[in-house]
Amino acid sequence: MKNIFQRLFALTLVVVAVPAFAAPSLVLISIDGMKPEYVTKASEHGLKVPVLRSFLTKGSYAEGVVGVVPTVTYPSHTTLITGVWPSEHGVVDNTIFDPLIKRPNVWYWDFADIKVPTLYTAARSSGIKTANVGWPVTLGAPIDYNIAEGTQSEHTDKPATSPYNPANILEQLEIHPAQGEDQDVLKTAEAVAILKKFHPGLLLVHLTNLDHQEHVHGPFSPEANATIETIDGQVEQIEQAALAFDAHARIVIVSDHGFLRVDHRTNLNVLLAKAGLIQLGPKRQGEQHPSVLNWQAEAWNAGGSDAIVLKNPNDRTLVAKVKTVLAEAKADAHNGIEAILDHEQLAQRGGFPEASFLVDYKDGYDAGNHFDGPVVTEDATLLGMHGYLPSRPAMRSAFMIQGEGIARGRDLGVIDMRQIAPTLAALLNVSLPAAKQSALHLR
Picture 1: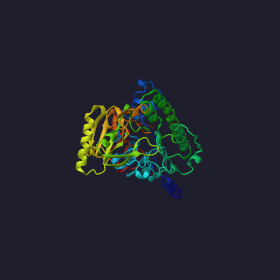
Picture 2: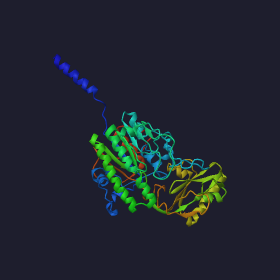
Picture 3: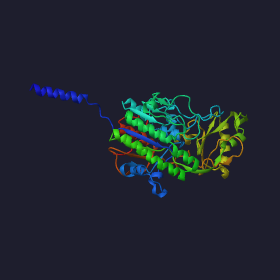
Picture 4: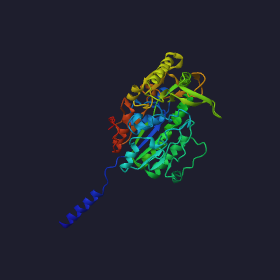
């Protein structure tokens, strides 16, 4: 009898010592600018992407993801890991509003800009080891192994603070970047090394080369098609590294927005300046365009749309004047304006809480940055753009997932981008209280 009690006591100790249920690890890979058709209609475009195509049969996928206002990188990526609109999470555009052009090309780099819990903060609070390679808005983020996004694929300034945590993470990973090295090649190597060395329960990865090629050459251009085929191999490298330490790992592929081909730029600030709503000064040294001395209303570029911000949005006379300028601009078909939303309509869509209007451009047009010269210009240096209203099918992004417990071959239809974060939180057994959308049915 004594031996029986001793054995029962020992078994009790074993049960007590077993940790709480740990979910399989999760790797979230964002392929910036990937339209779902790069995968769902790969054969129609002559694309060889066997790894990405495997998600359609081995996992669950969306035909398209309806994004946020605006459909640009930083707001979208923040919605992907919070489950709420930009007006709620605080990252409302790629770049900050800078009406006097005192700090051009400053992006929403800092984690401090995010106002709600994120997938990685929830995971870390639950004891899950977290890691990141290049996810936007992660400078200073509480991530265990962090290589933060400090610049986008376009030419932008870089923040002054270090993107690394711990400071010597590259040395620990034995990564030594070469000058001018391909960024996706580097990010893939960093992600694989992090998986092999640190075995995180949650890893975020942001690959940007496809977005760059689509901007320069257009969506489904030969250059973009070659890039997605290269990325297919990079996804395979990351997936294999994840499965090597956790055979139950779930791999998630997302993107942030779709793309449209463009050939015209509409410089709305030229019209606002002509209406006396922007006061211009002489050109600064080294600059091609005039300085801004003062402003009453100014267009805030968001790719395929412009948010119109008023210095005093409560001034009814000013609101009426700007409304008239915009209506006249839309009436001229040469300006390529598709729609104008007012503040209330913007609020209903969760975008640009500071803006009084949003101007959405027609296919083939996007927002320019000039304050003088022609209102509409042609520019062959950029042939692809996003940032249009998410209601356009061309702006839909992608979602695919496979791994333990995930239904095989399930078509989820068209989903809301805000559903992705609560879905991933459920898979990790963590809570995102700010996210109100229902999780996707993946089991």
